[in-house]
Image 1 (cartoon, rainbow, N blue to C red):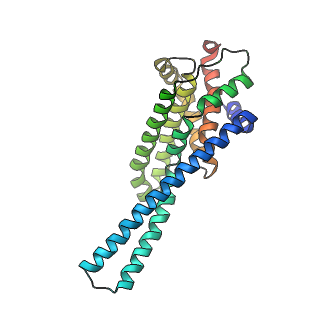
Image 2 (tube, rainbow, N blue to C red; image 1 turned 90 degrees about the vertical axis):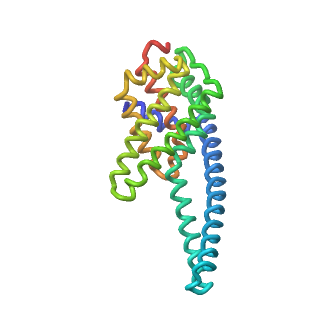
Image 3 (cartoon, rainbow, N blue to C red; image 1 turned 60 degrees about the horizontal axis):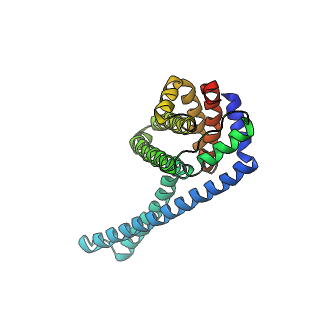
Length: 237
């Protein structure tokens, strides 16, 4: 697995992969910015409305005090949106990556396994469906772990291991489904559950690094192409 991780890191900047990486990062940033702006405006409007309502209903403080409270809430909302964007990065990158995983896999298979039978690109609806499913699972995991993060540091460990399982499962099956049916891909993943989880743990660490995590779907797909080749062996040749 160490060899596969080293290859995945070095091959991020191969010319054909670099082209896909730029598109993936640009689209992920665009979605995050749009989401952040829209959410911030909604929350700021709610904060101002709440302050105005409190001023008219309670009226114990001056207008300036309520305006200052609205400003503080707006700033806190902005920080919350930024924090939320960081926490939701795996979901965003997974959705974006679903558009590009086959381009990455094709490039790596041609580069490192030219003598093997090439994989078959996933149908767009299947790749997109996998991306949406994983994005929703990521959001559910983060929402479930967030109270534990706020109360104790255990939440970070929970999210790390949950991400390791989810990321390993998602990207290994995407790589495997280029050669197998979805059912066979799941069976192969379960048969190699420990190796897939450890590879997922590497991806989970990668996705926890700010800015770098924008490249998560590309790195993860390269890694899992190599892992699948090693674990499936002759069945893909």
